[in-house]
Image (cartoon, rainbow, N blue to C red; front, side):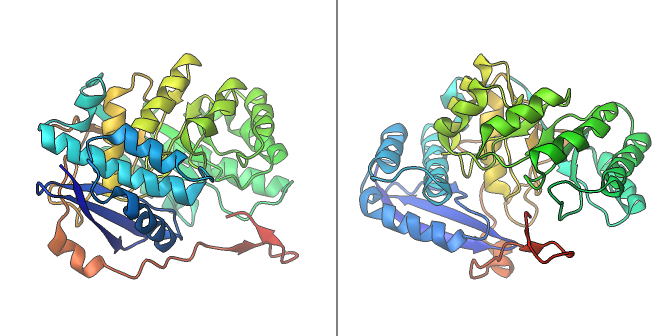
Length: 372
């Protein structure tokens, strides 16, 4: 079997789908993307085609090593995301060729179904609580939210009390068996993250995501040691090398590799194996599309330290058979490869040029740049 062609498809709201063709008629799907840089990633893939066309797609580890190590410069969001989407598609091809789901090729399933969580937002506390109740009514047993920004390096008591009021209201409105996670988006300084974590501790938070930016692991260690809330990070880390220091310094109890950024399916499994040594949980990051979710589910199925899977789209209007939620879980995929097929007809009205400008925030008081 040989790789014959690559096809990029830019899909609203901000996604990039990849199709990898073979001379045996098997087509693999991947989702290589850097949010706001989809066209840049697509060009990186085009440059990698020079080597990949004519190669055997079943030699996944070998091709990954060549793509990652074959350039003088390694890693980073663009190159690793390009490799991630290609790698997903290669696993899809191999699974279809052998007639089994990808997780069967990675040691087999260790669970029968996969827990997923949903996002909750609202401009007012009332709207926020109403939306949270709606998500629970839809079947979700775990929710994630965030706080308004921008956030100052050391913000006011008023801001802290507003954050607490928001979480207190939704915690009071929901049963105690519903988990709530909070994403600080790296907007908070370590000092501010410690202040907000302290007031949130009584509410049984499942995890506090990206309490500060991940570049300086020692700052996250400081935050982690200051609170009983499990700290989560990983969406902006790439390959197992990017997670090494986080684990060694025990900066986080929950790792969040993104299957579209971290290096792909097998790389995420390797990261999970590293986390297992430190008794850390894995909750794959995924604010993207249904191919990303399909790839994440294959990893979730076969790692013992899985916690919960992020999702924003179960695939309606994108894949022929959307995933189904039941009691907060998605049943174990059983179809070959990633287990999905794109609905090409439904995608026609969602195509766009791949341009999605990331939000840029500024502090209102002095006009300085603020983390989004």
